[in-house]
Image 1 (tube, rainbow, N blue to C red):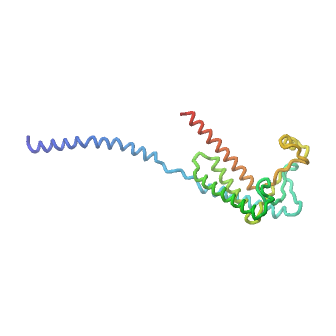
Image 2 (cartoon, rainbow, N blue to C red):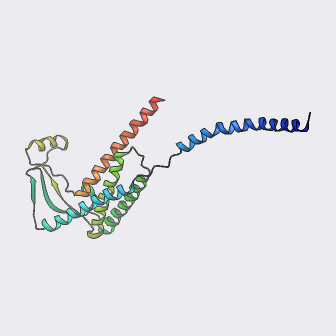
Image 3 (cartoon, helix red, strand yellow):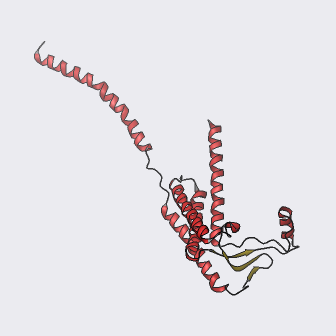
Length: 228
């Protein structure tokens, strides 16, 4: 056998030995491409949405409170919106919902509610960061609660109380009053709901949306477990 034939045979053997590795690398390449395609960037909730919705809520709350102070400050000033059901009257609430801690001294009450508001705001922002793309109810609920919390926090810092002006009530003997009496007992002159403001409406609406999100999440979890 000539030297040329020997070299040619050696080169062919080396090529054959390299072929399996080349084929193996080629086989792994599609898998690497698939993994790269599946490695999508982590979802980031739109913080602009959080800022805009909470800011609109805050402006609406502070604006309506300013109007109430300017137009409802006269003693016993009241404006009826729906006779026998809804009116506007200025009220200063030193406590929380349903008069919580209203009889405590300002030295205790004001720092307590400010601290609670700050903790709530921090919790809302941290929860918003963990939003999933399909959590629409929570995406709306969190900024509504945030805007409402900020509105009442501004009041507590500026006035040491919250400005309320929306007054819901029933007159004694009306069908609505009789209906409420089934759950509360005699209303004695009609039922009077605690006076509230736009911030309170936003907070309640936001909490309800958070509850909807919780219900939807549990429903999805049960559906996923049933599919296993």
